[in-house]
Each structure stands twice: as C-alpha cells, then as structure tokens.
Image (cartoon, rainbow, N blue to C red; front, side):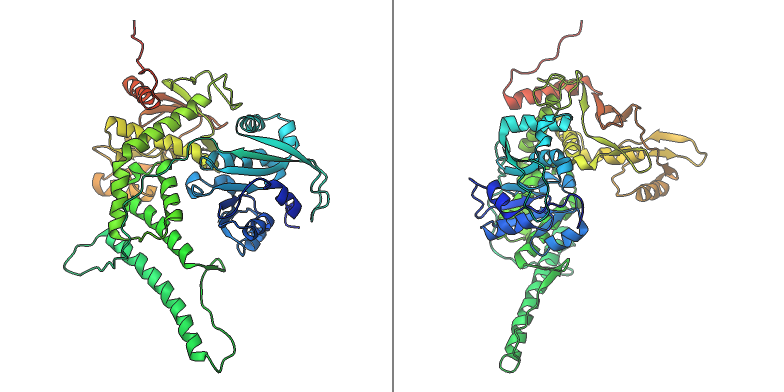
Length: 507
C-alpha cells in the first residue's frame, strides 16, 4: 500500500460527487489525485483538461501517465498557477481535509466550483479554527451532505462516515483586458551589426527556434515512415518527452510562453507591476489564448497593456489587502482568527497579519511559503503604496530577503556603517544572493556585508512599516508615516465608494 491515507475514490462515489455538474469541456483540478481514479473519470466523461497534484512519489509516477502534475504538494500551489480552471474535484487526506478544502477555496478563481469529500467529523467536530472557518464558508457559499460509509465496499475500505462539500467561489471573475494582439507569425532574425542586442528579440528567437526543433522532430518521423513504407511492417513515431511522458506541441508552447513571460518581467525590471492579479491574468491568457503568436509585437503589446492598466491593478491590490485585514478583526463573522488591533471598516495604523511567518530549519525567522497568498498580498501592498507615493519599488527589498539577511555594511575595522533594509543613494541591493551583494559592495565601497537575521519578537524597520514577528505566524505591523496611512484609507474609500476617509484632528 502506498500510504495510510491512500483511499482511491470508487466510481459510484465520483458519480455522486458530480451530480448536477456539467464537466464537459471544463478545465478541472484534482489536488490530491492519488493514483488518478477521479482524473480518469473526468477525462473519460468530457473534461477538456485535468491537472493534478500528488505528494506521494510512487503515486505521482502513475498519475503523470494520465494528466499534467503541477506540484508534489497542493498546499504550496499558488493562485496564478490555476487561474484558468473552472472546477476542483477532490478527495483530500482525511486527516487534514479542512486545510486542503480551505486552500482550494482561497486560491481558486472567482466562480469556480469546488467539490470535495471529507471525514464527516471534520464538519461535525469544529474544535479548531480551520474547521470553524470551513463551516462558515460552507454556510455562506455552499452546502454539505452526508454520504454515510460510502468507502465500506471500496478498493481500500474504511468505515468512517463521509461528507460531500460543494462550494461556489465567491466574487466576480476578474477578466483581463488583453486584446488587440497580432495574429501573424513573424520570423525574428538577429542581424549582426545592424541591430543591437535586444533581450526580447533574443527570447523570441530562442522560443521560435525551440518550436522549430520540435516540428523538425515530428517531420523526421513522417520521413522515416515514408522511407520504410512497403518493406518494414511497423509504423515509426517520435515525440518530445518530459518526465517520461509525451509532451504535446500545444503544451510545450504554453509552458515555453509562461516561462518566457517570467523571464521578460525579470529582465525588463517589470516586477513592480507583477501583482498577484497580473500573474493570474497572464497564466489564464496563455492557457486560453495559446493560438496568439509569441512575437515581439505581441510582447510589447502585452507590456503596453500592463503599464496602461497599472492603476486598476494597484486598486485591486489595495482592496485585497483591505479585505484580508478587516476580515481578521476581533468579532468577525468568518470564524477566522481576529484581533482588536484590526478594524472591520478601515485598516488601522497598527494591524495584525495572520499566517505570514514561520520558523526556519535553523530556528530563525522565515516567510511561511505554505501560505503563499498571504505573502503575495503583503508584497502587493508595498507595490500599491509605491504607486500611491510615486516611490521607486526597485529600492525596496522583499520581506523574505529582509527576514533572512537584514543586510549590514561593515568596514575593515569591523564597525557597522549602517543597516541596509532597502536600496538608496548609497546602496542598491537588487541581487539574487548574498554573495553577489557582498561582491558588489566590496568592489564599490571596500566594505563587506554581514547577514544579521531578523528574530522573533523584535521590532524591525522594513519599507513603509515597522513590524514584529511571532512564532505562531502572526506579524504585527505599523505604518511609520501617519500621512501615508491616511492616504491608503482614502484610496480604499475612493475605490469602494465609501464616504471619503478623513483623519481625526489631534487636540
């Protein structure tokens, strides 16, 4: 047996799960797919595509012969990876089904249907915060029903009572404004001595070159069959392989384009625009519009759109942070952890962010990467505040690097010159690793960098905030600038149509 929580879903249970749902031509996620019973059923009954996650390595090998496996741990999957799906159908591990269903709901796109099995005790015995939160989401956005001991005659039997949870993800589907692309397949040629090196042109050349090689391999198979026809009895075939599974031309193009967009944003210093919402949009765009050629004209068209819609995107980031924080006030109706420090109608100058920090392997402070959506929201907040103030986002170090290395300059005598929490007129630290930072400072300032990790329970200055992290995962934040705090809430009022927020006059 593969592991203690491996309970393949019987066909009759799958059929019960999807009663009333139309799966034809849908893109479906199976987050804990096991050996693929649900995957196979969905594909055989009309699903356009099924993508999956599976932690067990042996089961994952079986699964890869049936569908695309996007992760070995569903709890680390981010919303931008699945922004194109329309349904989630899942039989998660019974021991932490609440966590899996909550994660599916949190990262699923608006309007997505979520269908999940769980041990009935998960719903009936709400002793934990996660179970209470799940119960509230079911009450507001779905329903639950008992299926009884439906695994008592299964391939692997269990006599626990099982419940079926069905949810509809709340919110309006955020459609991107990507339009006006060019459909001609232009051929990009790098002319030596005529045009200077261009990173976009080089990327397009490499992309088109890779597709050409793929096509040439398939053409080679056709030629091989032409040559052997008449005296060799077998048909010859050639294919691209990835993880021992054939890779179709369309899949290959989509994955190349997604990687290409990440590369472009990194090389063209576009990270200031790359909010969580934009990453979701680009993933959805590539998945649904794969027929649009990946050319220089279309790349620059995309970049024009991204820059042109920055204000709308930053407004969305402002509201996502507002909704996240006000949801966690003390007497909230969501059954999530709440604090008196947080308000339900504005973001207080001091506020608490849940599920943000974790303990690293060395015992120090780290970012909780299993709560990717929370991390992305706090980083989006910095981007939005930079947009409001006109500050350069390039001068801010991300929270993860800050926690790991609170960078310091140090002269040869061993005295600290200053703390470096973000770039500025003296130091600019947008590098990939501490080694590169250290080399750059030695070269220009004849000094060295020492890493001084951030510790739990101490106050730290980071960008627009001072913050303190706690081992239970919460982060206590405070706006350093009172005027910026007022400005943020004024923008929330503008976007939501509230009466314009005005700060109280100090006596």
